Length: 322
Image 1 (cartoon, rainbow, N blue to C red):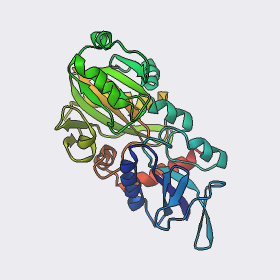
Image 2: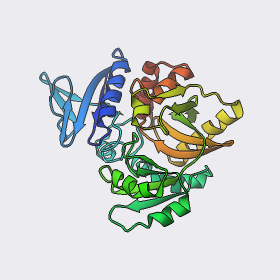
Image 3: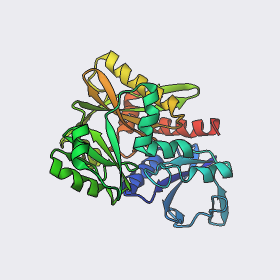
C-alpha cells in the first residue's frame, strides 16, 4: 500500500482554506488503496496532524510508533505559499518524490497574475487591460484611472482567495485600495473592470489527454467573488453553467489551451468573465480549493466522478509523470 503525504496548512492568509482542503482530501482519498498522512506545513515545522510528530526534512520521512515511513507521493493541498508558489517542489524533485501539482517553475509563474497574463496572451485568450504597481513607487492614480477607467479592481499580484481585493469606483478610493494590498503582497495588479458574468472551469490531465470539467457560473451576493462568496456561502454557483453548448465549449477549450501552454499538471482552475460572447481570463489557480464549498468538487461530481475516484486519479497521474 502506497504512503501518501497530504500537504495542508501553509504560511499565507490562505492557510485556513488549505486546512479545509487537506481534510477533504484525507477524508476522500480511499484508505483501502493508500495510507494517508495529513502533514501540516507551517514555517519550518512540518508535522503529522494526528500524532504531532515532526517530519524529518533530510529525507521527508516520518518516525511514527517505531516505524520509519517514507512517502511514495505527495498530494498538494496548500493554497498560497510555500507550495502553490512553487517553493517546495524543487525539494521533492531532489528527493525523487512525485507530487500531484504543477512543478516549481509553473507554480511560481501562475502565482504571479501579471506574468501569467503575459504568457497567456500568446494563446490568444482575451485579457483585461491592467497595470502592475510595486510597493513604495510613486503612483499617479489619476493617470492610472484615466488609462484603465472606473470602476477597476485592485488585487495582490501573488495572493489568492480574494484577500486584499478591492473594487474601486471613485478616484479617491484608488490609493486606499493599493494600501489594502500591502499586508498581503509587495505588488498590486490594477485591472480594468469587465462588465459580464463570472465563470470558472477546472481542467486536469488523463494520460496525454487534457480534460475540461463542466463549467460553473458564479453569481455572488456581493459585487464580486470575494472571500465570503467563495467560502461562506455568499454566492450561487451553477454547475453545469446555464450556457449554450458552443459557449461552454469555448470556455473549456480556452482552459485546455492554457493548461497545455503553461505546462500544467494535476488539477487547475481557470477563472473568466464572459463579456458578450468572449471569455476573458482572470487568473489560473494551480492548487484550487478542494473544501466542501469549493468549485472543483462541484464540477467533479457534475462530470460523474466521486471525489474518491478523482483524488485517486490525481495520485496515479503523479506516479505516471514522475
